Figure 1: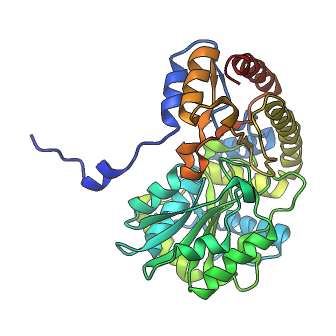
Figure 2: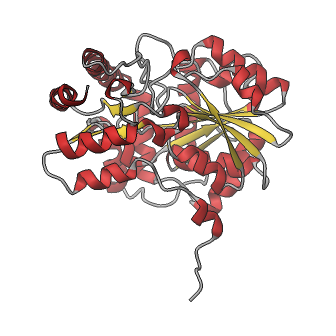
Figure 3: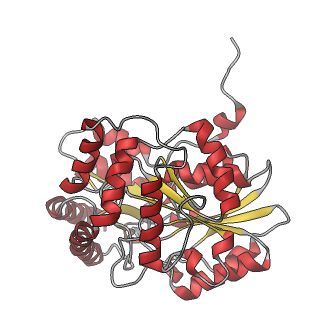
Length: 386
């Protein structure tokens, strides 16, 4: 019988991080630093709003765009944080997480063969999402010498007549990098010069340490050519609620809504109720969790540096990205041996792009006790291989 799987799906590469999760799940006594999942439970007052939605019978579809109350809440939240104004009626779209938001944005703008500059290292789904939307991902590397911030020069060198957009993800998964204003302005200048859109994944926007997050659309002349994607998963510990959102000029949101109404209908109703409570009354919870992450960040970065696994200082998200050059191993070999011999799960940096080779991603979204246990085991490992 012939194969019924499309060639485009056959050509997609499997996730470079899934293998380690699958192996670790079959083993006992594994300390995992591999998962980008907050170890906090959604704050109680936020959960309660979701429960109330169910118990009061608000379980039907909402507007395709999301409830107007939530869209107004998102617009107010962005105005409060960044001074940006979006019309909740037509410039805000509620999505099923940033994963849907990214696919909608790409599908809405790309014709077959259009190119998107994908800055790496980045989340493993980014280049794949471009392919699934019918476009061509063109990798642009960021390097540790610039603390994994992409330069305008690197972007410009990759532009062709088919380039349509730049896809950036800062604060960054897997590196923890945060764009300094100098680098943001370089990206903006390239976008203006070549008339490109910027797709900015800002899901970790509230999780920054010692720096200020700048919404890319707030840069001069960037609002009209930027699609910002964010959501509730990371900042508010709401991964399972699956609520994301897009803010962009009306023609772009209108195109994305057209796709969304056929693909999804509407984001989960009870999740939207909880999200509104988070935006309106969740700042104290965010500050508490951010403080906890900051303590863990300093613990894990100092620990890696003391072990000879040189780690630049991550300024955002909840990942450290140490170099494993001192071991003489490839990042894949390091991760394999560390998992099998020391029962610690981390992810090869090369899973996130070629410029991540020689590094590993370690999440500090886990407990302090887990981080300390992992560092103890890695210390024993380094006494053998360091």
